[in-house]
Image 1 (cartoon, chains in turn yellow, purple):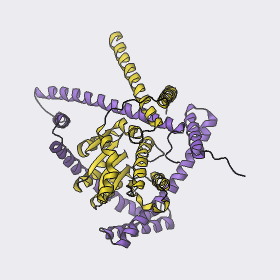
Image 2 (tube, rainbow over the protein chains, first blue to last red):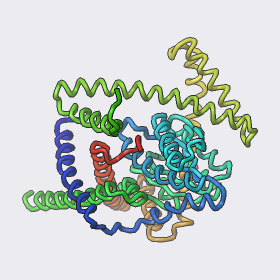
Image 3 (cartoon, chains in turn green, blue):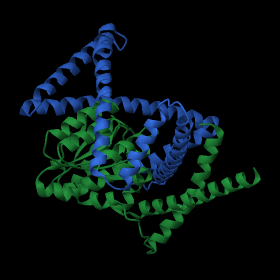
Image 4 (cartoon, each protein chain N blue to C red):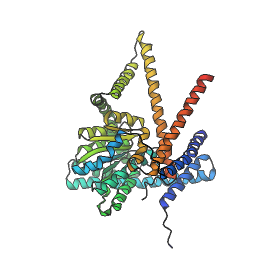
Length: 249
Length: 205
């Protein structure tokens, strides 16, 4: 990163931190903002319940982004959603089957599922193979996951995290198996594929709202509200800059 | 001696995150710590890969033992993984027989899968037009036509007009893409900040 990028990043951090704190305080005092309806968040909460009813397993693909690079934030958002699925799955004894395409995600995702079982008082029910590293690398991961979906015993396919064009293999596998597919990613290539092949879609920043919608914790809602506030500010700054540039040449 | 019960993982995560961030400010002390932390990440990632290797073996050996559908492919995978491991441990990563697997097995297979992507994406686009007969589907179809026709080297008076229209269309698309990227960047910053403040606890209770 060059100096300008670091300064811009630190400026956003400095702007973000107090706003986040203020919003969290307001939320603790009882303020409840109305979150805009997003179709995928109406579909996602019921997935574990449906898998329990059908005796099948919900498949959660966490993508091929790891925890050490620029895709870490998308992976963390996906893990936040996995936590919600795992807690519900452990309670109904239908934990999700999780696939990852990057090795650093494996132990963290296993930890999430294991903790969900421990909370339910059934730590012995956890199996290490509930989280599978299909293959390291985006293409082999997608090709392997496609076959996994076609083998059956899957109730629905949820894809959250880092996905590129290769996601078309996974959605193809899901379509052949007749699965309902919900997907979300921050990468434009992945979004273009999901638009054409997923039933419900989380577009860009909506992926980072997973915690606020699924788990409804104060920290997540405060973060989402702050994000929106800063977005409005940035839009105003962009509009002002365009006006100044147009009027003054 | 007993340590007090504190959320150590959260404290370590926040402290390491903050130091790494400060390392970008060209302050020598923080830069040195940042460099050491990055080296640690590389080592931990290598251990995660070893863990992943055993995970792959465990999953596929279970499949072979249960004789699940496609168990033969799992057997091939296990045998190949062990063979490559033996060659790798025996001669090191630069050894010719070890590299042979990458050059003549892994690379051609990867290229073949990538080539299949074209057909899968075309089918996905066709499926969209069948399933999404709404405004979104119409815009998708129009975009595809504008971009495809815009790439044809048209001669005569229609050529510049088509190129002009394609460029305007692309400009609108780029505007939308930048909006998306801005939203993702804000989401990334928010996640980073939650991690630094200890509000994002993926790694602990």
